[in-house]
Structure formats: structure tokens, C-alpha cells
Image (cartoon, rainbow, N blue to C red; front, top):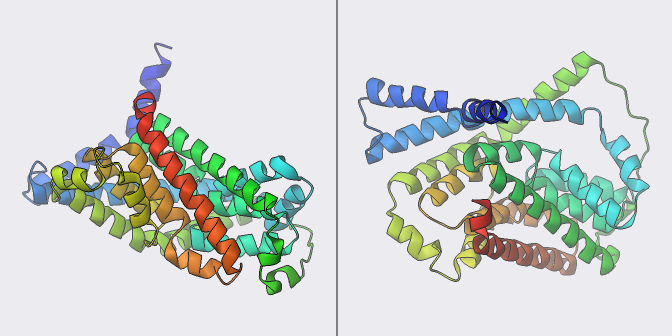
Amino acid sequence: MNIINPVFGFLNDQLLKMKWLWELVRLLVEKGFGLSIEERLGGSVHFFIYDTIKIFILLSVLIFAISYIQSYFPPEKTKKILGGIKGIKGRILGALLGTVTPFCSCSSIPIFIGFTSAGLPLGVTFSFLISSPMVDLASFLLLVSFFGAKIAAAYVVMGLVLAVIGGTLIDKLNMEKYIEGYVLAAQDVDLEPEELTRKERISFAKGQVSDITHRVWLYILLGVGIGAVIHNWIPQAVIEKIIGGNNPFAVLLATAIGIPIYADIFGTIPIAEALVAKGVGIGTVLSFMMGVTTLSLPSMIMLSQVIKPKLLTIFISIVTVGIIIIGYAFNAFSYIIM
């Protein structure tokens, strides 16, 4: 243990937190731009450059690795695996499947349609729909690099619990009649999954990195920019007054603020980092992140074309209540995981 802990600490600091990059950017800002990172402008420039480069490096490496693994589980194979499993096991598998699909909420909906049209139980498909944008392996490692392993693990566990409970409630309510007819009428063609060569898997993984980066780069830049402003320009007293620990409605406000925003978790992490630095409760911050990633307005508009208003309302209500409960629970027991 005396050897393992220092080695793990070194790897965490240099590979995930990238302290070497932090120092290089500091030298660039101070020596190259002539700005002090202790001042507002210099601190903002350092925050923006460091977080942007760090996120894109981690994003590219993690998405490549996850996509390479994902190439062994094409939709046809996944449908066969999930199709034979019913009940709580199926919903747990649906939620876990969401963790290996690096999609934002809008990108998850076509997969949801495919699973639903294939005849998978509604509870399984909704467990996937909740967990896919909220929790994935790449976001877990990013959360580790920003907030540490305990918070990252707690976030993932709570996200999976919410996905399973949400899918279970929807399954018990027998809401199949509230799926749009064209989804249920879609014919599912069972094709034998094509076996890919190693070269094809690498090509697929590269394509996923390019595609996902192309879709999220703007939101990452916006998120880092907002984080830099919060971190260096908005007084801590203002942040604490609005969503600080002394405001009993902080979690409610953070969730409500997050829902209209469209971004994935990669764009919200820099904002979350800045809010935590300003003393905002970790539960409040995570509620904001969950609201953004799972219930963004554009994705709800897309989903309204797939399911009828009653089911959409129930889905939003279940997820919103779950996010709020998780937020308050995190704030109440933050001393355990911090």
C-alpha cells in the first residue's frame, strides 16, 4: 500500500488532472501573454485554455477507447441480449448499457426509438434513455479528474439508480399506448451482426471521436467560457446568495436553470467546477448537470414526436423529482463523500 498510493496519486495527477498541462498553460499565460493568473483576466485566460485542452484530450482518448469496445456490441446484438431479459434485470442492463454509449440526450432518442420498435420492454428502453446522456464511462473519468473518485462514483451510482427506478415506474404504469403509432409499427429487421476486423474497429472508433467532437466542441467552448466567467468574475457572495447552501431552494433553482440549456456533460463539467470553487453545494451542482444532460429543452421537443403528452409529462416529472431528491441527498451527506 505504501507504494500503490503514491503511484496512483501520480497517475491521477498527471494523467487525469494533467497538472503538467496546468503548469504549461500557466507559463504561457504569464510569460507569453504577460498576465498574472492571480488576477481576473489572467485567471480567466488560464482557466479557459487549460480546461479546453484538457477536456478535448480526455474526450478524444476516452471516446476512442469506449467506441472500440462498443464496436463489439452493435445494435442487433444488443437487442438480442436485452430482448431475452425481463423485469428488474432488464432495466438494470438497460441503464448499464447507457453508460457505454457516449451520446447526448438528443442522440440517445434514435436509439430509444430503435429499441422500442424492436419490442423491448418500455421500462428497459426508458432506463436506457435516462442513463445514456447522464452517465457514461468518459464522463466518469472526466468527473474523477475534476472532482475526485468519490464524487464521480456517487454521481454514477445515483444516475443509474434514477434510471432503474424511472424505468420501473414507467413499466408499472403500462404506458405502451402512449407511444406514437409509427414507432410501434416500425418493422424490426434482425440482421446478423457483421464481424469487424481490427482495422475496421479502429476506423469506427476514429469516426466516433470525429463525429462526437464535431457535435460537442461548441458546447465545450461555451461551457468553459461560462466557467471562466463564474470562476473569476462573479463574486462568491452573489453565487452563494442565489444557489448557495443557505438557500433552501438552491437545488430546485439549479435544476430549473439547467433544463432549458442544451449541452452534454462535457460542456457542463467546467461550469460545475467553477460553481464548486465558489462554494456551491455538490448536490446543487450535480442537479444542475443532471438537468442539463437529461432534460434539455431540445431533447424534450424531439421526444415529444415519439411519445404522447401524457407519457412525456410522466417521464419529465419522474426524472425531475429524482434529480431534486438526489441533489438534496448529496448536499445533506456531502461530508461523507467530499
